Length: 265
Image 1 (cartoon, helix red, strand yellow):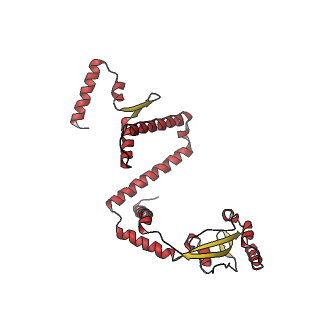
Image 2 (tube, one colour):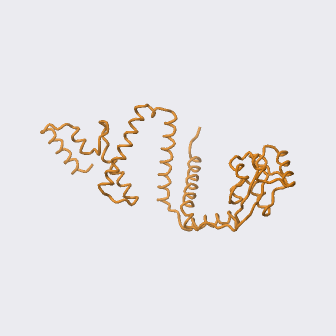
Image 3 (cartoon, rainbow, N blue to C red):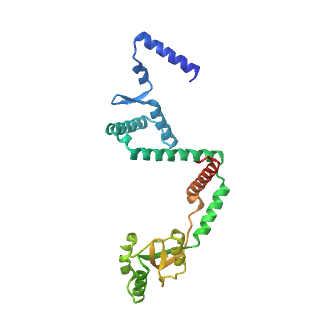
C-alpha cells in the first residue's frame, strides 16, 4: 500500500472516530453490493468489468448493472450451497480440487508460453505432419461388431448369399451405428484402432472384408461404401488446435523432467 493511500486511510479513520461512524460504513465504501448481510467486495465487480473489457465489451451503466446482477446471482447460489452443507461433500471437494488443478495447469502453460513463445515454424511443421498422417483420402465405411469369430464368419456368409449389410447391421454390438445400417460416416483410417484402419484401407469401394477383423472390441465385418479426396483444413483454421497440442506436449515434457528430479518414496 502506498504512503499516500495510508495517509488517506488514517485520515478517514480519524474522521470516523470524530463523527462516530461505524467501521461498517468504511467497509461499505469498498463494497459493490450486500447480499443477505454479506458484503461483496467492489474488487470482484471491477475484475468482472475488466474481463468484459478484454472481451471487447464497452463499459456502460447497463454493463455495470448486468455485472452486479451476475455477482448477486453467484452469491445467492453460494449461500444456498453453504446452507445445504454441499461444500463439505467429498465428491464436491474432489471436483473442486480437479478444477483448481486444471486452472493452475492452464496458468502454468500460459507462463511457459510467455517465456518460450511457440514459433510459426513449429506450427507449420506440426501442420505438415498432420497432412501427411491424414493421407489423401477420406473413407465412408460401415461395420458390424460381433461377440465371436464364428458369429462374424456366419455374417460374412450371409453377405455372400446376398443378405443386405444394413439388415445384418441391426445385430451389431455397436448400438451407435446398428440402427443406421452400421454407418460410420466420413472419416480416415487413423480414427480407428490399427487393425480396423489397416483392413479398411485394403478394401475397394462396395467391398466387404471376407474374414473377420479382430480388435479389442470384438470381431468386425467391414464394408467400404466409397472414398473421396481428403481436404485438410487450412493452417489458420487448425492453428488454435495445433498450438494447444504443442502446449500439452510441453507440459507433459515438463512433468517428466520434474519427476526425474523429484525425490519419490
